[in-house]
Image (cartoon, rainbow, N blue to C red; front, side):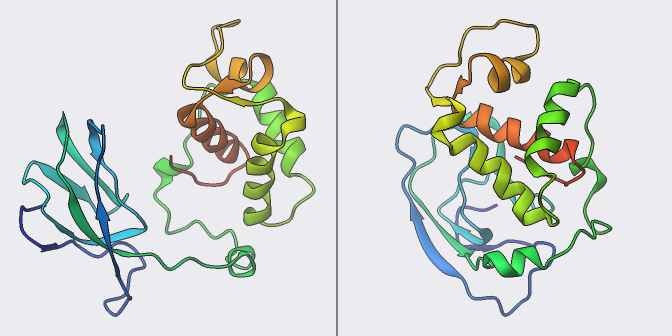
Length: 188
């Protein structure tokens, strides 16, 4: 990615005539390898040359943690509605197999994912069921900038069954593992 306005390679499924929205991003107190972007990035402006773009995953990254200045992204922000997502089907033949790989998952995690999603017959509702599980106060999850104490050697088991305390990383990773455990390709 360059310091001037730069058109990024098209992402899978992107059409040349997609409508983009200009988004100004002010990374306050942000220092990381990843550059925050929204939707499907099409163009970046005022981004240092040290960032790279992976068109397969849609991620902008650097080899070193950086604190970027303000930048502008042209992004495709179109979002399908729930009915469109329900009708999308489960043909994953064009999805990179790396998004379905999963090993070493505790059987309790897989059983919980199956229990929560079995009533549904489509991927959207299954994903929504897992999302709702984490957000329902009756299930006891607490958002905190620190995780709960380790009770086992398995951090995922601890988060889902024991302390239920964590931040975005624990929620996103747990949902991704649970979706993969029921055969739905996922990336965080």
